[in-house]
Length: 155
Image (cartoon, rainbow, N blue to C red):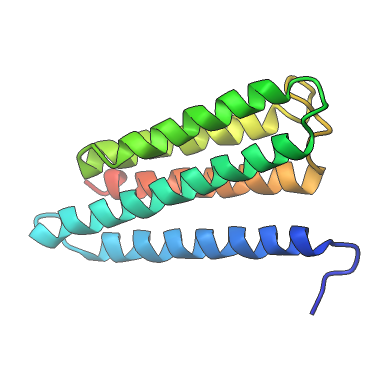
């Protein structure tokens, strides 16, 4: 089944985004089901942080790809630098305690959602990606931020 008017690459990005969100939702629900004082809670938070780090690295990689495709457009260097910053955050989250990592990742995803939105008013290159992609990425980032922070709220 193909979506009318959507390229194969667009469809693949849509499926990948849905799969990543589904994975984070599953991991967050599993984490929330573990009692707060149980030793397994720390392990569940660690696993959620690890998966969220991989998702953040994937999101950054997608934006690197978008910037590479549009290398001739003004402002793509800034997008590359921002993507590399998010790679660094994803890499350092592995070195932190789970609660600290989840808080850091939540802030990173929320920040990335804001950066995605900044492409539309033109503060960052507005024509680097289609509107549906920028909006969809911002929504995925906002959901990921909430899912990372959800276990911290329950404490």
